[in-house]
Length: 271
Ligand SMILES: Cc1ncc(COP(=O)(O)O)c(C=O)c1O
Image 1 (cartoon, rainbow, N blue to C red):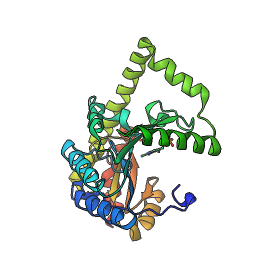
Image 2 (image 1 turned 135 degrees about the horizontal axis):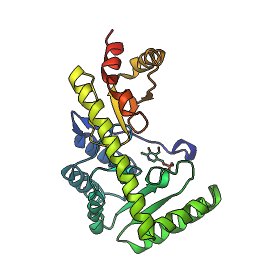
Image 3 (image 1 turned 180 degrees about the vertical axis):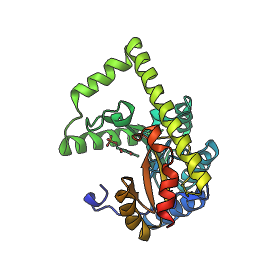
């Protein structure tokens, strides 16, 4: 998407061992601010795709303090992608968004919300950008810019699914039924994760840090992942290649197929 608009992107390293790499985040933020005088940074949390990592409160506190510090030099926008928020095992996770109540004037947060996961409404193209700022003028400017760019590029979101969202979330009976059904899927994915992650740890299959969410990812160097993926496919194991890893879709593999999977992958990986 950035390329389409001739924008340059830079990456920060995501993990340092089993934790968010705050050192890399900080040096990238400073480097980009010093280079171009403004920063737009993207973070996907909770249930990060593809690792399944959810950042801790203290990691978030450090991220916020770095963003605040850098915003003394130039404007900072934090694009917080919460695509998997409704599949967090922590029912109180959303309360943590209160941190955005006290932003410095030179910082804006844009929360990217999607119905693709929340309502399993993939392809229906419904979501929202929720902009938060203490600067009313900046908020107005953001609103105008998004309205004009949305209208000029793709017009509007799917009307019937917008209606569906409104209908379900404003009807207590439907909302309750929806929440109960969704909870059953959160529990199911967590049971699947327990099987896969426990077995991976037992056989020594290296995974990126995983807490919850749709995916878990095996550490595989970029120069080895394609060949390994082909060997796995020959054994009817279908994973997705990601940067330095192969992603396992816990959201779509039944429990009985996950039992023994880590060992099978490990055997193919190390023979
Ligand atoms: C982390 C993350 N953000 C955003 C999206 C996009 O969702 P949408 O279907 O609303 O474009 C996805 C979809 O896979 C995702 O994994």
